[in-house]
Length: 198
Image (cartoon, rainbow, N blue to C red; front, side, top):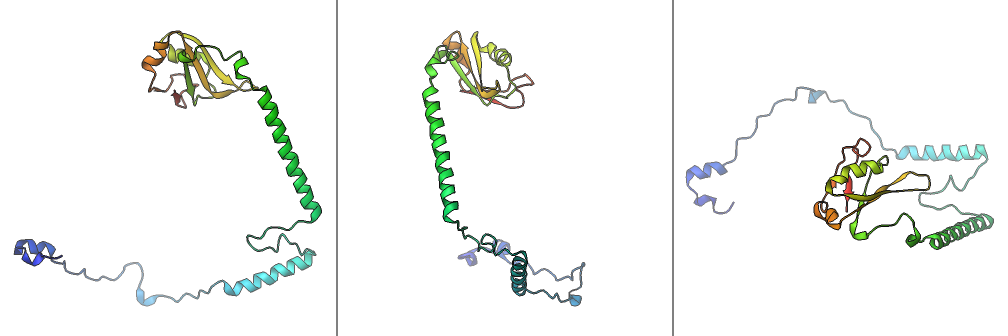
């Protein structure tokens, strides 16, 4: 460190090196009795493994392109197999396009009989437990104001999709206390997972 020679002797002692540690022999093993280990590489085994593989393929009568391929090499298909694969790919693509078109034609959220209520009085809740019910949510959020209706969105089989809408009677009830709320309900059906209120 530059400039240390200008320090007084009592501070120079702080920068002095400590004496070296005394050597002690290890207690677990004696270094004079180390046994040599005869360890070789795996290069000598590669030729043996390659011969065994070729011999097994010849015995089974399979010269298989798939099994004898190098790493990263793609299997080669015959013209018929390649045509079949392309036809299946086109069928899947066409089926997906038809399903999308059908869903697009049938999707009419404005005609949904469940989608009612003033959006300014509606509270959106996500990450609900699958077993949560409308009564659980009503019990949890009635403390913030009077609730007009509660709707948990469900799929065709009646299972919860994990989110819900709560419509309050007054807009100030929804905006007043719920803005940064992250709730844990007291119901055992909802307790296992925290729900996010937006």
